[in-house]
Image (tube, rainbow, N blue to C red; front, side):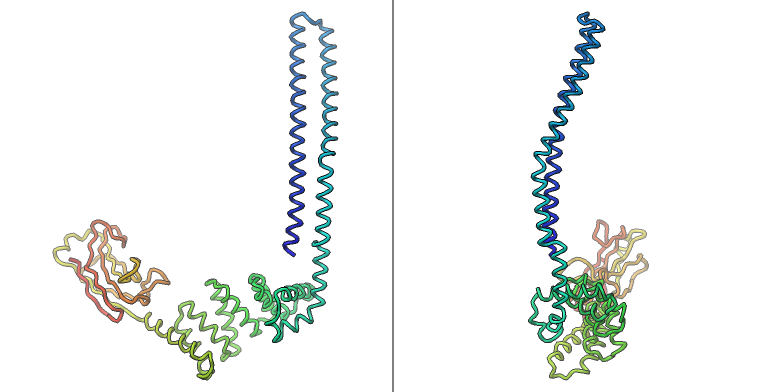
Length: 399
């Protein structure tokens, strides 16, 4: 339907553009002829004046010739305009008629009459399609049938906008058709009427997760909490809440949700092992976030004199074999040595690049005069050490 409407608009636009260009070209041609006529008129005016001054014309003869020239100029311009109007009529009427006829034909075939007919047919087919879409036969539903079903629902909702269940069904249909924005709006309308319907909350949360947009995660989590407030043991709610928490890096909530789910399903259930694996993964990540490294930094007596006034000390860890970006860093003014600091995921520079994600740590310390962690001339660096994450303390010396 959208394609048909676009075709009609394209034809009308092309026809209008053609008529506009044709009319403009002919106006330009008319201006050219009128301009030539005016130039000849003004030139002859000047010649009459010169002839009078040269004594070739008396004053009476000059006035008669000047009046005759004015009359001829007006007559010729009028004839040119009439001729132009006749040409415009001949050149434009046929294209104009064709554009109008073609637009009317397309509108008759695909315009509002056809759209209304399709809407009426969709309403008539709604009960039968509803049985197919909402029962076990839904897997056999074609896209065309689903589009007709959705169109029928839209017509029904136009007359009965306060039907929360109809908005829910329409939202699910839009989701199946890949129209996620319309589906989201439909879910919101359904929830505005029945805010605690569990099926709507779960389906809406699934859709929000389906978008893959991290900004949708908090709202999805809110929907799932509302489900679990009503049914604390809702298996789908626990599964989805664990997924949302895992995606947001909330390992404790993910573990809690999935362990509650495991308590309700037998080990023979095909879902059990994937959930158990996910719990183990979340627990491993949680333990990694609790890792801490205590670093003591000292400086040799020979280098103490090289420390610039107002210098900054950076103690940081980066991947032993990978990007130079620090996974954790502590920055503080230089004071008395030795200095002891503690590094953990809390000191990450980026939320998705943390100490707990590295297989090996390269521990480094730098005294910087310009308060920048990047290496620069005059910086004092400790000898870096590569250690395993199991290490809890390390000592660096600036020599």
